[in-house]
Image 1 (cartoon, rainbow, N blue to C red):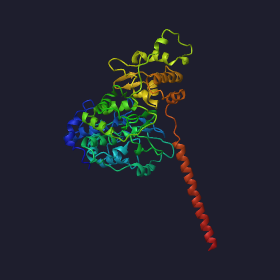
Image 2 (image 1 turned 180 degrees about the vertical axis):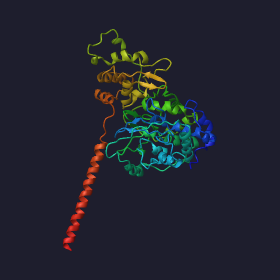
Image 3 (image 1 turned 90 degrees about the vertical axis):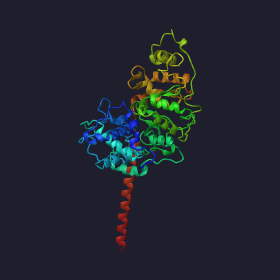
Image 4 (image 1 turned 30 degrees about the vertical axis):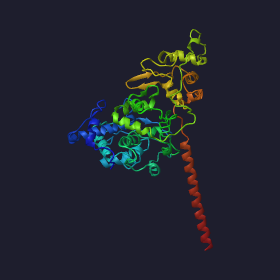
Length: 465
């Protein structure tokens, strides 16, 4: 059992601090285990279970969210205590096996879209607390989400057994004596419950995390989860612990970045509810992750930009009849300057971010910039920036983005019309399905050829005899 993690009884005050999360519901059978349920609620929040297991407009933890992957959508399951449609019949051992080994109670394997490779590091205490919470602190919902339907051969769930042999490490987390308790707590949270590497670590051909490139950046659907290693230019080496804590707690750090897309969801659903001590532990650990440098980053990605104002030359000038011919300054004046100000400095109170010293404009990968322009920036409880997908064409988005980069960001970064079109269209089909089918076909031909050779050899041997 993990000696690093404090006993459940000492975590009760921490768990009960989550007053903003749905209230704990207890049953008479577990009335004496309120502390255990509260501790499980905290770990479930740290694990952001609600993000994947709650569909838009759906019941909490009832599943039904289609999680986009390169091989097709994977449907999240109902993990409420419903005995017919959820996990209500699971024993603690079955719950543990699903959570840390990726095998359901019926013996079928889960797909690693459920980050059991990270949850494998959970301590025995935290697994027991999670079980108590899900069985007694979550409202039972009697709905059954649609089944996952992946193309052949990925629909063969038993193939995940071989995948697990290659990429699933046995836990739980073991503390590192070379570091103090705060660092180890952060390492446990980042690698385990918070499963940060699921988004921020790149994947290999088999869709497993490249551990050698831990936290160096990965793709989450159309979004790019940036490098958060300790590299001073490409990562967060230039961030202070306090700035990282503020970013995780509030979703933005002045003069650095603001959360959008999946990261905004992680802040809103999970990170902002963690204790100050846990947020600091995460920040302390992240700042020690071995640096991975992108040669395109010649200075810190948050350090680009200086005030620039080209609007005087376009105001009072008639717009072209062909709106696709509008220049970057004209588009900025029409759609951005009201909030971000003429020189890109943002609002005076900081509520609307500055475009200067902003990682959204400083990274070589510009996908997030384009998606925010198309879809807007949404945070609980409202919208911080509207999307312009219905108002601006691909040409206009590319022209505006290029203007923003050239004037306020890293001029080496690029946005093309084709890139905008691809991101607007949504996730592209992956070649993995074709590759897997080709490999299986070639393997089958090899096996057939080998069997044919054996049969001919036996016939020849029989004739000789």
